[in-house]
Image: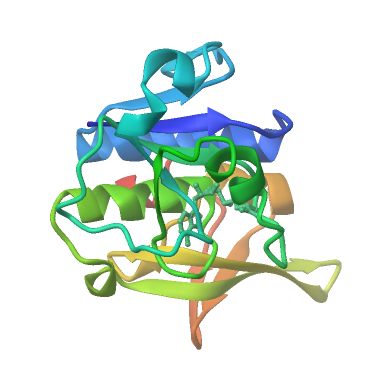
Length: 207
Ligand SMILES: C[S@@+](CC[C@H](N)C(=O)[O-])C[C@H]1O[C@@H](n2cnc3c(N)ncnc32)[C@H](O)[C@@H]1O
C-alpha cells in the first residue's frame, strides 16, 4: 500500500508547503508517499499520472463526497488523495477531477468535513494503521491570530485538522506563508496556543 497525492491544482507556494509537510508526515509515520502528475525536486514525485502507474480498479480515491467511510480493513494498492487546495464551501473538485473520471476505483470519505491535503494524508494513514475515524481527534476551524501595528488580525481557516498531541496538525510553512515572520497564536475549539515565531521548517510533529 502506498499513499499517492495526484497533483491537480496550480503549483502555488501554499500547495507546495502542504506537499512538503505531507512528505514529513509520511517519513514520520514510516509509510510510502508518491506525488504524481508533477516532478518536484526533493520530494518523492513523478510527472506520470497515478493511472499510468496503478490500475484505477485497484485504488481507493479519497473524496469528501464519497458515500462510504474509509475503514482499516479496506484493501488497495494505493490510496489516492487529490492534490487540490481547499475550497469554502466545498466545490466538489475531487469528484469532478478524480471520482467521476475513474468509475471503477473505490471511493471513500474520511468524514464530511474538508481536510487539507496533509491532514487528509495523516488521517488516512491512521485509519490504514487500524484506527477508526471516530477514534481520531479532529477540530473544525482554525484561527491564526497576529498583531500588526497594535491591531489584532485573525485569519480563519474553515477546514478540519487532526489533533496531534492536542494541537492541530498544520504546516508551519503554510502559516509563515500567511502571516510572514510575525509571532502568532493559534485558536481552535475555544483553546489558544501562543507560538513565538521560531520557524525552522519544522512541523508540529517534530516539536
Ligand atoms: C483540501 S481537499 C480538496 C477538496 C476539494 N476542494 C473539493 O472540492 O473536493 C484535498 C484532498 O484531500 C482529501 N480529502 C480532504 N477531506 C476529505 C474527506 N473529508 N474525505 C475524503 N477525502 C478528503 C481528498 O482527496 C481531497 O481531494
